Image (cartoon, rainbow, N blue to C red; front, side, top):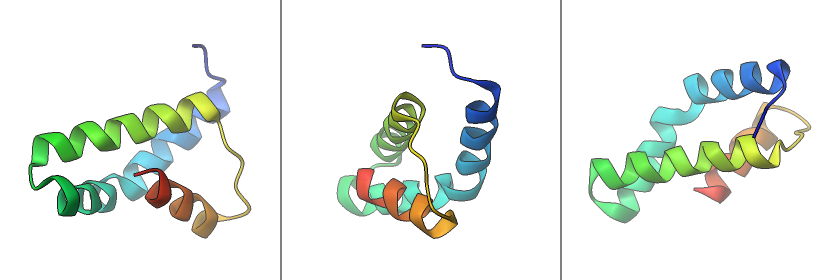
Length: 68
């Protein structure tokens, strides 16, 4: 899987902006930090694989929450 540089930058920004919130959300389901981090890692793999386009930051955040 070879992502374009723009997608890599977008992914890095999304990780910085949303990873803590997504781990907390996943933790409400798993009750373990390790499993929560694994889930969030899979979410970002899906983000990279699907390369979705978003209307705005709120749409991006909603997609990430839904996938988590």
